[in-house]
Image (cartoon, rainbow, N blue to C red; front, side):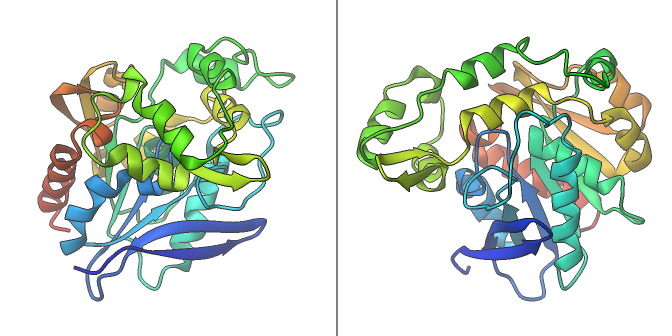
Length: 288
């Protein structure tokens, strides 16, 4: 198995970075991460899949090593993230055989796939599928009524964002109970690309204002995309704190949903091997 490397994709307004596991001749899988994270945070989950696929795990706009502009004030939907993914797909030497993602990355992947003439199989871990009313409210033409109303967005805006060095940041994170359930090594992987150096030490690669804006920007049409993709989409829904709220809406549009017990929304961090095995199962069922 080859070691992962970094690759850059030129987009119209900047550069998208990706963490790549090269595997000549293997089917290509493109993976997109959750809000506030980065591709490297999923190393523990993705590395076991490198025997099966050539993996391209992107850093979405405003995250990790990617250098694309962000404007929290005008951000209204995840369609811009889907457009970025489409731009990456179009630059690949062969079409992706499997599209995968987690949370915001899962929905961005679904939205991108719905725009493809022949989308491949999708493996979507805990996509954010809220009631239809959220999307309708977020499309209000004059302002975003959801701004300031999401608890996660409020927490993001209050997030600490600056430490004298990487060791100080790592110490702060290790003492936080939210990371106690993560598998060994995952936190270290996240911090490797989730922090960037600046004049004062280190800060978060994903600006908390952009993270908050992503939570509030729900103007994209998830159910329309699910209707277009239909049975090619497979969803993994967890037992604790799932964001697959509108399960019935997905199932009515032909999306296949599997349940995983004993884990929460951050299942790829808590149980990376189990999630990797689920992705393999999706690929096997689709003969990818």
